[in-house]
Image (tube, rainbow, N blue to C red; front, side, top):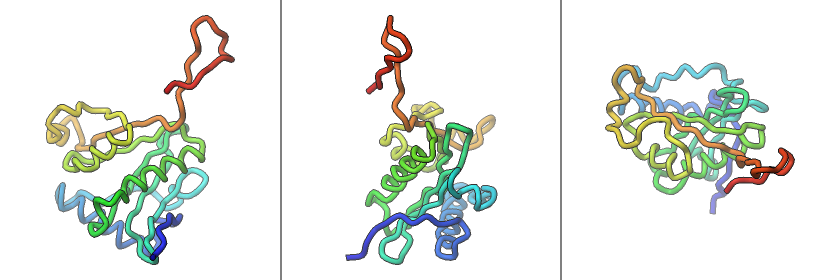
Amino acid sequence: MDQICFVETTPDDACIVPLIAALAGECRQRYGVNSGDRGDGPASLYSAPQGAFLALKHGDEAIGIGAYAPYDHDTAALSHIWTRPDHRRQGVALYMVQELERRARLAGYKQAFLTTGFRQPEAVSLCLSLGYTPLFDINADPARYSEPPYDGHLSFIKWLVPLTAVKPGRPDTNRVPLP
């Protein structure tokens, strides 16, 4: 049986470029001509210690990709999360997001931020199932966010580290983790 593993790579890796092109093509198909043409900055943005670009490989084949880069000092921006169509509905995206979160936490980030598009209900469901807080009204028609003043993106945030609270009447040194 072929091994499944994460491999750190770069967005300009020859084995990854076709997956990024397929991601861009899918975005264009869902959203229109100019969608999916990403201006994500230099590949070095997705390099340690500030970020990572991962491929999930099954044997020698990359079946999914994902990345994180700094959003701000405490927050990692997750992006490029995509699974090949022939490997969807098998938990690849879930596995990828969990690994990106784990690595971002180890890199010192306290939060994760990500966006998806209003025509990607499967991505919205994934974010909600992983405990991300939507920064939009999930009960509103998602198409509303494609019109001004919105830009079509649906944003989410999640704490990667346990929040702490001070017990009433106790000094700051008695912090306890919240569930």
